[in-house]
Length: 402
Ligand SMILES: Cc1ncc(COP(=O)(O)O)c(C=O)c1O
Image 1 (cartoon, rainbow, N blue to C red):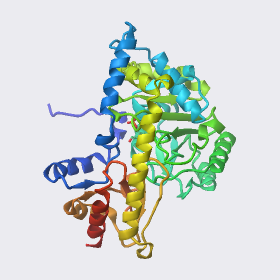
Image 2 (image 1 turned 90 degrees about the horizontal axis):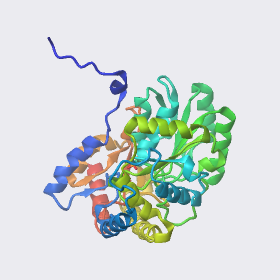
Image 3 (image 1 turned 45 degrees about the horizontal axis):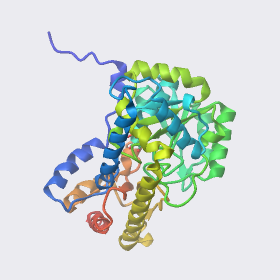
Image 4 (image 1 turned 45 degrees about the vertical axis):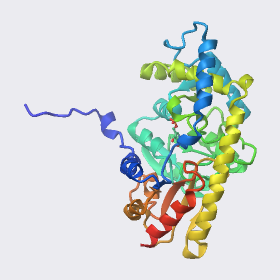
């Protein structure tokens, strides 16, 4: 009998992570050449991850455990202490939530997946930003949804373009990242969030707001989340990946009230619960009484802000506006978006850049249409020490001029 692969339609729809193969190419180059500069990461800098703090948090969590079963199974909705602290943190950011209405997930990615699985049927349409986070797009595609990009400007997704796209495609969901969008670094002003909330309330479209970078702001006070204007329509996804460590795999999903029970049911059918062990550690981290979160955030914000400034200066040196290059100047998060003139193809230039000792993510990977995004690149300023960033940008300029 010939071997067959009776693949489910669900598995058939899953899109491979477009960024992983690039990391696969970069890792041996970095291992062979310690001076290699990777501006491609989607993760925090290993050297800024709080190893010592983590040891203290583990010790404190074990001491506080008192046989509540740190190493045992937990409840599907998550540890009560973590839900309370996570809800407190999100409330401070303006999210309308309670500990009971919040579900602890295995990272922000699972929060997005759950929101998608709770709402999408095959054939539904999801509107996303231009460019958009590939992880969310592949989740929507796995659910059988058609992903449609909506035009953005410097302030994020354009409300009039959303209205048009709703009339044209009757979407089920809108997916947005109003704070320090991945990959563009853009921030949506408060008035536009309010307008967008009005649009989704008027049209009955649901939305997912991805807030995983929200706490990494350099200067301003937080802007009101989209969710705060339309809590019955907006799912809010958060995570400790970018503020503590991705390996914790701890995130949170705030659902519109009508979805709370369903979210727990789907989560427990999916993987029972997030790790109780890392939840307990995250609970110590977010505990306002322990006052570790604010100190750690201050140091991350200061380090990332400096790196962002250094990259901006290096770009100004090598990519003058007159040559047709522009880039975003983020006020938080980890990424900026570099756009070139028509003649530039960042996808094609990647090989030359890797040879020159620098890596980035071509903008094309942030679009479903393979014809889009080649004139742009995502640069991560947060994961490279500031003294290496200028060299990385100089190498990038050299590779693009070749
Ligand atoms: C925009 C965005 N949302 C969600 C995630 C997923 O976060 P987590 O590691 O918590 O699953 C990431 C991770 O890179 C991200 O960049």
